[in-house]
Length: 292
Length: 245
Image 1 (cartoon, each protein chain N blue to C red):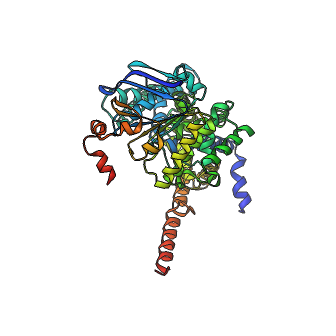
Image 2 (image 1 turned 90 degrees about the horizontal axis):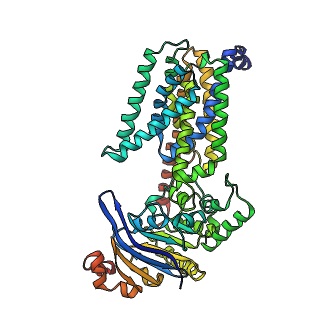
Image 3 (image 1 turned 90 degrees about the vertical axis):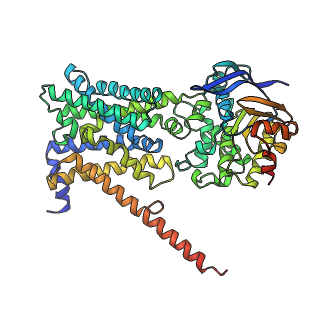
């Protein structure tokens, strides 16, 4: 089998095409959003929101509402509860996050266990890329494009919010609004991403691409291109890898992202572990060789 | 002489802790005011109250004859944050940071127009940062980074500049550059407030000074405010001699 056949053979199955399309959309949206999450330090918040949407999704499923609405409601509920616990008790933020999201996630699991359903709600937990239906894909596409459009249009304000909310406030912008916007988009993105990798692994897609891009550039505008591009590459590699190795698809996508992060962490020319060690050694040699 | 910032009887609590106690302070256009006090004396709290980030429990703040909210929406207030409030590893260039000063002048997507670029170039020139325009802020010295934030205020066309500890972690040469720059801006009509615990910088920098320890202990000319008996009130005894060493 030559390379072309390797690449085209999976595409003869419609379920593979849908899996690739879903992965591609989720990867790009998550990749872009991850740039802000990584820089603000909201990785744990990404984990919290993506887990907390589970009960919302199950309830929306029971009521026959769009899943995105249930997810958004519970995403905001989680953020609100975390803020409430942190600001009105002596519990610190990480403990507040850990308490709120695990409780909501557990509520979601309980609801899953008592909800009779045609589509297996367990797929929400671990993703079911190969079982994405046509209507699922349309939902992902609509939501993904909407989130991406807002992110791209408001990117400069969001970056200012991440960098210096004090200045944003001083020039008449509302940091509270921008933070809320980002959290709302995070909740909607979680809905997109869980179609691909499931609730449990969404946080990987929300953190790893941004973290990887951060090691490669000193320009935020470049991060916004590099992160989704790398995420897309990993998404495609993961889907193909799972096809040929006969392994589960969502986790393969995340493994590809983790492996790429490891490569960049080691070999990135300016920020990589090896590059910085080498240039430090060269600097020491140069100084040692210099006549006193 | 018109008052561009008028703080009257402002009291602020952080939870149960009294942070500002009936503070009166007037800032005038064309003058540099030095706000002196120890860490925890309420300097940052006062700045945040002037910008409206904190709401006073009692008392009032007027900026340019109106509320802080009105001044914010008109882009009148430029703010230079403390070093520890800035993420130095944030991947932005000097131009990126200075350009954020223009956001209030731009449309909803903050796309830069030629007038915005011209304002940024002008601000970079005044702060002598033109050659560093593409440098990531993480690769600047402490003084250069401070100047970048002052440039942001200039690009913003702010008439009121609030600087929180602009000399912390800044070498002597940059300190002189920043001092000269702030004097020029005041000469052009700006209102400048500098929070600092660097007493040596004050006489060459400020026209007015106020000594803060939750409340304003002394106000007046810098030489008057810096008299040892006054400093003893704000810093404890011997602080002037210690800084002299």
